[in-house]
Length: 316
Image (cartoon, rainbow, N blue to C red; front, side, top):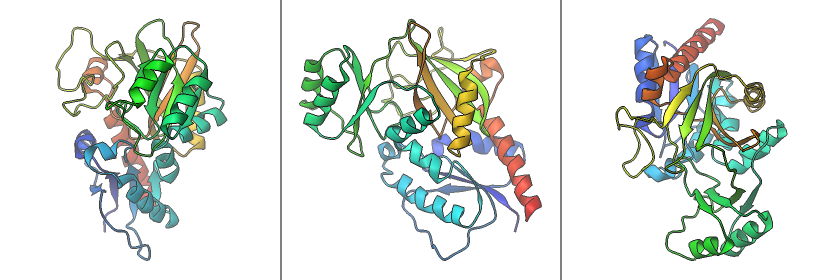
């Protein structure tokens, strides 16, 4: 049987471009859509290369336990010594920002001051303990900017958690985090394939916090630029010649945590200090920004997976 690239995911809209690139390169692959399912732990998985694109936001698409099922599949694959990219360690970080921040801090990468809380009174107490004038809330298990709201007072947070608009995290943990004020309204997202830097993209945040770069976003994702055509001031722009010492730190962080493919987001404050606040292990790319710069993340990913498939076939 011919070895394949197996793509593990729960969102077909986020695999379209990857499959297109794999087809262009003539690489054999199989779509492993994981939501409900089963895995026979006594069976032996097929030979090949396995790549997980499981998402922390799967529950917003009706796939509440897809990450848990994917974790079972990945553990099975790893037990049998299969070549797995973005395996169980990466998934653990994908579904928990607390785990992300602890891993980033262990790699001496600065993150915003953050307190994790479960419960109404605890959320309010966390904001008071944080002791800053402006802060944001966000979901611990997130993606797509879930639960991100900016507050300038304890009273505003109190009204929110007691109102109908409060949206709890699917895992029950809300993060209360210092608001890092940037001199200009944008953040930077660094993309990595095979653990190596590919490019950095500047993302305009002037209209809000939902920063999904994918070409296919839900209609209610107000701030996602997908499908809007060419904008006068594009929300996503690839930064030519981006070079910063943070890249070496990010690459070491990815190596330590067995993450092959990721988008890592940071913001600079008025003093130019970098605060890293998000690691996306199911990273997506914006086609308009890539076409303008002539750089293509999914093509680089397909090439990487093809190269690794070749190595796997040689070893068998």
